[in-house]
Length: 82
Image (cartoon, rainbow, N blue to C red; front, side, top):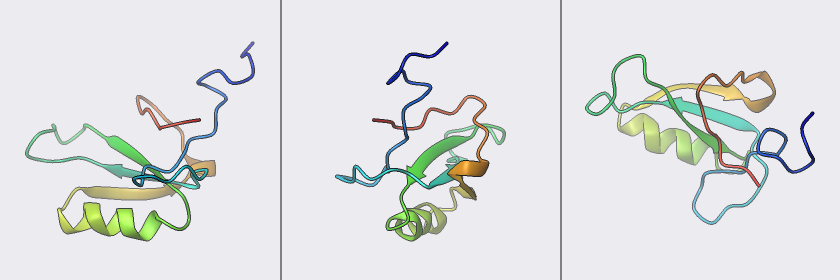
């Protein structure tokens, strides 16, 4: 059984610099110059920063999908957490 506050039970926090808000979104991305096509990295985003972080990744051609945290099933992904 998980103990309270263990990494598996912590709420992910937004990946935006300086933001400590609870994440509500998962931004799935990869850099095709560095990663194989099947490699997926993730950023967590609160409602306030979802669009900004999505645009940052999208302009660079890195954004693959945006998924609500409630619908996210992490495979090998590590999300920042409290």
